[in-house]
Image 1: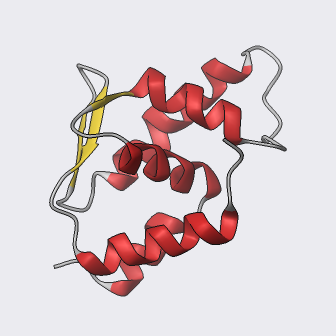
Image 2 (image 1 turned 30 degrees about the horizontal axis):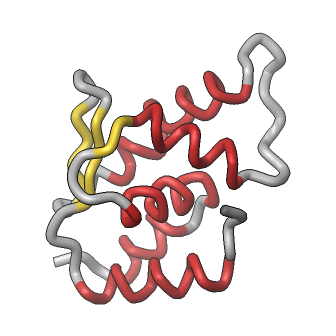
Length: 110
Protein backbone atom coordinates (compact mmCIF):
# COMPACT_ATOMS: atom_id res chain seq x y z
CA UNK A 1 0.00 0.00 0.00
CA UNK A 2 1.42 3.34 -1.05
CA UNK A 3 0.92 6.33 1.23
CA UNK A 4 -0.05 9.83 0.18
CA UNK A 5 3.36 11.05 1.35
CA UNK A 6 5.08 8.51 -0.95
CA UNK A 7 2.96 9.63 -3.90
CA UNK A 8 3.73 13.30 -3.29
CA UNK A 9 7.43 12.48 -2.88
CA UNK A 10 7.39 10.75 -6.28
CA UNK A 11 5.66 13.73 -7.85
CA UNK A 12 7.75 16.48 -6.19
CA UNK A 13 10.45 16.63 -8.90
CA UNK A 14 9.56 17.77 -12.43
CA UNK A 15 11.97 15.44 -14.21
CA UNK A 16 10.65 12.45 -12.24
CA UNK A 17 7.05 13.48 -13.06
CA UNK A 18 7.97 13.70 -16.73
CA UNK A 19 9.43 10.18 -16.58
CA UNK A 20 6.22 8.92 -14.97
CA UNK A 21 4.06 10.69 -17.57
CA UNK A 22 6.07 8.98 -20.30
CA UNK A 23 5.74 5.57 -18.67
CA UNK A 24 1.98 5.95 -18.42
CA UNK A 25 1.76 6.54 -22.17
CA UNK A 26 3.40 3.16 -22.88
CA UNK A 27 2.39 -0.43 -22.27
CA UNK A 28 5.02 -2.65 -20.73
CA UNK A 29 8.69 -1.95 -20.14
CA UNK A 30 10.15 1.22 -21.65
CA UNK A 31 13.80 1.81 -22.50
CA UNK A 32 15.41 4.50 -20.36
CA UNK A 33 16.73 6.11 -23.57
CA UNK A 34 13.14 6.54 -24.80
CA UNK A 35 12.16 8.20 -21.51
CA UNK A 36 15.21 10.49 -21.76
CA UNK A 37 14.25 11.55 -25.30
CA UNK A 38 10.72 12.41 -24.19
CA UNK A 39 11.93 14.40 -21.19
CA UNK A 40 14.38 16.28 -23.40
CA UNK A 41 11.42 17.28 -25.60
CA UNK A 42 9.21 18.35 -22.69
CA UNK A 43 11.74 20.33 -20.65
CA UNK A 44 11.46 24.02 -21.43
CA UNK A 45 14.05 25.29 -18.96
CA UNK A 46 16.28 22.36 -18.06
CA UNK A 47 18.55 22.61 -15.04
CA UNK A 48 22.05 23.81 -15.88
CA UNK A 49 24.37 20.97 -16.85
CA UNK A 50 27.99 21.00 -15.71
CA UNK A 51 29.15 21.71 -19.28
CA UNK A 52 30.95 18.42 -19.87
CA UNK A 53 27.77 16.52 -20.84
CA UNK A 54 25.19 17.16 -23.50
CA UNK A 55 21.53 17.41 -22.43
CA UNK A 56 20.71 13.81 -23.32
CA UNK A 57 23.61 12.45 -21.26
CA UNK A 58 22.83 14.77 -18.35
CA UNK A 59 19.16 13.72 -18.27
CA UNK A 60 20.12 10.04 -18.59
CA UNK A 61 22.56 10.26 -15.67
CA UNK A 62 20.04 12.12 -13.53
CA UNK A 63 17.36 9.51 -14.24
CA UNK A 64 19.61 6.49 -13.79
CA UNK A 65 21.22 7.65 -10.56
CA UNK A 66 18.46 9.63 -8.87
CA UNK A 67 14.92 9.48 -10.23
CA UNK A 68 14.50 5.91 -11.44
CA UNK A 69 15.92 4.28 -8.30
CA UNK A 70 13.78 6.64 -6.21
CA UNK A 71 10.70 5.73 -8.25
CA UNK A 72 11.43 2.02 -7.91
CA UNK A 73 11.16 2.29 -4.12
CA UNK A 74 7.39 1.76 -4.55
CA UNK A 75 6.32 -1.76 -5.47
CA UNK A 76 4.41 -0.83 -8.65
CA UNK A 77 7.40 0.68 -10.46
CA UNK A 78 10.03 -1.76 -11.65
CA UNK A 79 13.46 -0.54 -12.80
CA UNK A 80 15.92 -2.98 -14.34
CA UNK A 81 19.17 -1.04 -14.26
CA UNK A 82 21.13 -3.72 -16.15
CA UNK A 83 18.71 -3.86 -19.09
CA UNK A 84 17.90 -0.15 -18.97
CA UNK A 85 14.14 -0.75 -18.70
CA UNK A 86 11.47 0.70 -16.46
CA UNK A 87 7.74 0.13 -16.18
CA UNK A 88 4.71 0.93 -14.10
CA UNK A 89 2.58 -2.09 -13.32
CA UNK A 90 -0.34 -2.48 -10.95
CA UNK A 91 -0.32 1.08 -9.67
CA UNK A 92 -3.02 2.04 -7.19
CA UNK A 93 -5.96 4.13 -8.40
CA UNK A 94 -4.99 6.98 -6.07
CA UNK A 95 -1.58 7.27 -7.71
CA UNK A 96 -3.07 7.09 -11.21
CA UNK A 97 -5.54 9.86 -10.35
CA UNK A 98 -2.92 12.20 -8.88
CA UNK A 99 -0.50 11.58 -11.76
CA UNK A 100 -3.26 12.30 -14.28
CA UNK A 101 -4.16 15.53 -12.49
CA UNK A 102 -0.50 16.57 -12.32
CA UNK A 103 -0.06 16.01 -16.07
CA UNK A 104 -3.22 18.02 -16.86
CA UNK A 105 -2.07 20.90 -14.66
CA UNK A 106 1.53 20.83 -15.87
CA UNK A 107 0.71 20.28 -19.56
CA UNK A 108 4.13 19.19 -20.89
CA UNK A 109 4.53 20.15 -24.55
CA UNK A 110 3.99 17.29 -26.98
